[in-house]
Length: 302
Image (cartoon, rainbow, N blue to C red; front, side, top):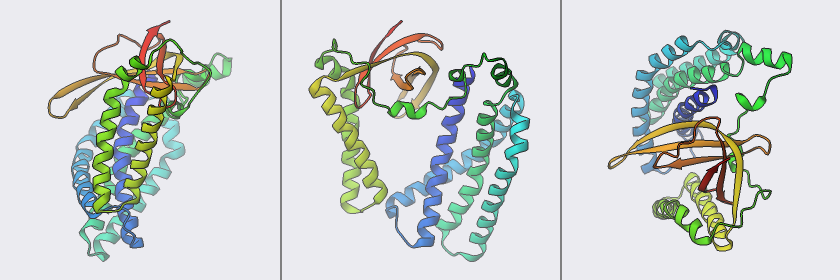
């Protein structure tokens, strides 16, 4: 597994634990400021999920530590030496806050949220240290010294490139019918999500839910504009990541995920498919997508 793919796997766990950490932080801020950021029903549901995540975190911490020790990235010692004190201090603050909440506060939610944050910060720290240490190995430093280092190979954070809208590469040979064929599933799923969120907003107002609904609605508007005017663009790049996502809902579904990155124009697209496309890391690819909403349509190898 390449460093780029390994870093993406680490980020997936970081985002997962980070989301619940932030949710519990909002609960604490809401309690302290007496402002209801989250509706009571959603708050109860979030705390229930946080409890499950807390148990999961306790179970997976030893695994994360074993993976870090086993892989021992070359930049690990240097990163721990320079940043270890920061993570230790933050964890100490969370422990103090947990003790304070347990001793002085009566509300069970604030006690649970303080415990959740204290525990969730541990796997977040381990994964972040692992992630950052991959950016500072001796090979990279040597390549920089001799002038052969390619920044695109390992260390550039390209995640926000996926939001970039570029008018440089316009494709005019893909019909409106073809655009609808490849984007209709996404369109209807977002409609359903919007209806669910809106139905909740009718009974309980929430700033967070309004923001989520606004983002979804905005993306749907962009997709509708793309379909109406037949707007299609493309990215000429190389596959910098390939992994499989196993989602179990009513029944098991496997998705193949490919990351196509154009370092020259700082652009990127994430392709998710329910069947294997046989694109491997390093392959040069032209990926076609809706211009404004950036929904994947099809690809061809270059």
